[in-house]
Length: 288
Image (cartoon, rainbow, N blue to C red; front, side, top):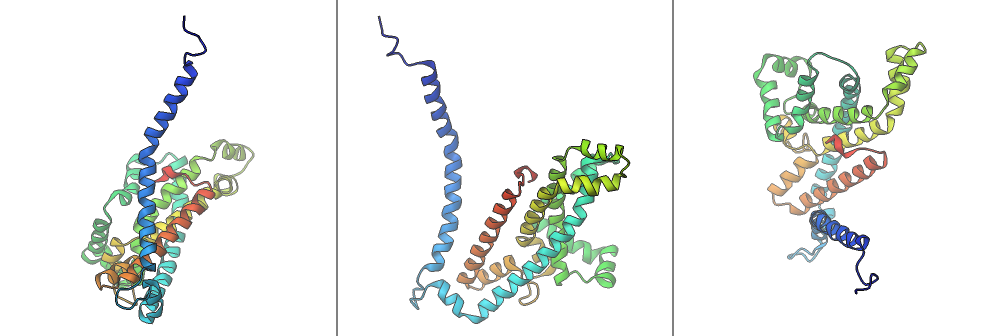
């Protein structure tokens, strides 16, 4: 007879099987994460390499180049101003729009919901061409561009291009936050005599505040990173409409690789910081 103690138990076999499965399924995750880290580290390390002709690190050479530093500084300031403007307008638009999608029974709700998502799935270059066509080839667009707000090849065009994409993102982010607020709280407030608007302002918005803040941060981050729509609608004039992504593209095209890589590292740092803030505020990944 075999000893019962020598036989592997069902729990032990199950434990080994679970560990094996965990490693098998998590390996692609670790591999992908390692690939992302490797790409980021490669860009940072490249800036610290010595220039073959001068023997000076690329980063030091960049800092000493006043013209390139002024260009990057201008692009950074312009990106901050336009993206913060875009994020603020987007959130102000998104709060009522997302509430309507989350709570209200509106006509053609499914159609509108799909239309709102379109800027998120349209290729960025196509979105930029579509915007340029609208403001240059349609009566409404030409009227806006000529008589109301100059858009094409202007700084205002940067905000419009960012807004076209970021507003859709903001609506998704705000809706995700509002969906987590129990509508019974508003119903109780209304049963006690509060109007629908008062219940929305005093009950729903405060409860959704962390999600709204997280949505604002990610909407701002998305606006900072917009390239193709901004390039097509606002142009790439140095010292006028060259936001950070466009400045990176222009410097790479002109052979100023150190400036382009520095902008890449800067934007990665901005994205990483934004993600940390987003997650610390309880932001949910499913809003993408």
